[in-house]
Image: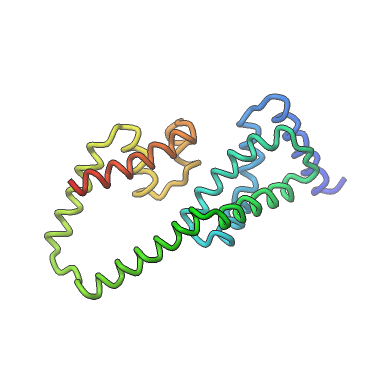
Length: 188
């Protein structure tokens, strides 16, 4: 038996264990091995690191459900197809396209406004940074932890889940709500 056949047999065994138990640790072991592949596929199609990181987590959530009743002979190939199809659906969705257009407009505006109105006042920037730090400190503990890990320490969702033992959906929620609360705090 070749090494590849041996790995394929081991993966099939993990798939069957997951399908019988629904144990996410078993699936996590299997998914972790190919997460770089999933990220690469997402980056190829979505062209954004942040969107690709989000997609990796969303694909994992999709896999948790679809693998339960799929007859998978080669997990790597199956996961590649699932990832590619997910990305294509994202690209087709109107909200994604509108979001991209809006982001392009915002980036263009910010770039142009910096050229037209360059920031000369370091004190103003220091004030903004101080206010941001105050706003972060006002967040709920879970939001503060997740926001700091994600934005300041550049941790992925998976790394935050491992560091905090929060559920993946909770981590996403804490980051999204924390970001919204920071925006509100900064504008007030």
